[in-house]
Image (cartoon, rainbow, N blue to C red; front, side, top):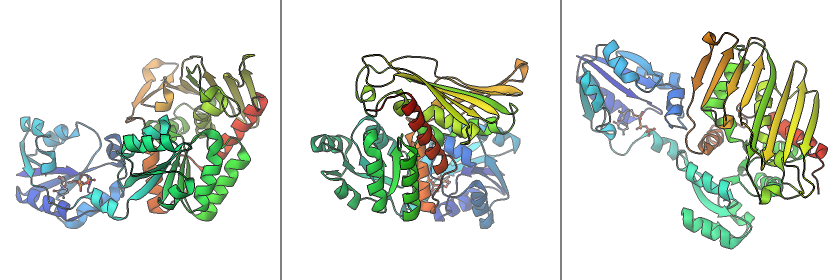
Length: 444
Ligand code: CTP
């Protein structure tokens, strides 16, 4: 009898061993499917500590598996069961009922799960990261909701300018502590998510770093290059993590898109055009000194440009529309020229345009339809459409879970830079925003 079972097998533990022993005893040939990193990511299992090869080695070392395969996509089990002539599919009882659909192909056995141990528990045993939230607005609220999907982190405190608001936020979202002072918040946490108004970011980040706290800061981290530079230098000196929370950068689909575009599939990249508009009629975004489409929205298109073309642009020019009765520009186009490519970021408040991304190359182009910054789908297109290729990816919830998962992994692993968004890239983006705003005369 041939038996198959599947799992992530992260931080291999006694529960895994017992499961494999019992699965093996059901027959005389055991096949173990180990999930790939991208499959786990796509099914929302973030924060897996070991990569697929280490996890395969975990299973191999038990000597219980006769054959090991990788599980890469949803629906694969049906093919595997047939391909490997499987008689029995076995899995832990936490999945009771979930795989009954396989009964059309083989026997299905649920084995009792070993109590008191799990990979999640082991990951948390390394210490749950206590997170403090700075700000009590819309985005802060979203982060609290998203944090529930990331293991090993717990939102424990909140601080914002007005205590009544802070308290109401804490009560509603069941956060343990509402603080009147920022220092008090910093005292009780190991990391902060800064979602205060833009002009307060730099000061909040600086103080957190100086107290040795890791920082995930909402975009824009800073509105000048010098400030962004200073903050990253400070973070490096204090040996803490600092990342700008540009959620798109950490989403699986965007990473894939950048990889496909930069690996020559469309030839050499000659231009990048990215648009982001938002219908806003009143509020903070439209007020001086730090409102306007550039400070509000330019981060996303600039991220795409910097990831696709790098930070070595030669020239920058900005065209803006600012109505006579408005304190800030409302629609802007930032053009960046690179040695071998040109690019354009279009952003608008109170105006709607197609929010797509087009990457033109010497062989073909890559198209990401609106909303490209959530990157669930993109297509590589050619003059001969028969060669076009479509790509799909998951983007769960509001997407903040991806940046938070990366933040937590970095804190745990001691890694201080993420290849998904490097300090130099955030600094370049701050510099471009600074130049564009100066050109648009939106100051003061
Ligand atoms: N398993 C078990 N007893 C445990 C933990 C896991 O029998 N205490 C079984 C699962 O039911 C599954 C297999 O081991 O059949 C692989 O599970 P996996 O998801 O890799 O392990 P977990 O510890 O459950 O991982 P996580 O906490 O990340 O969900």
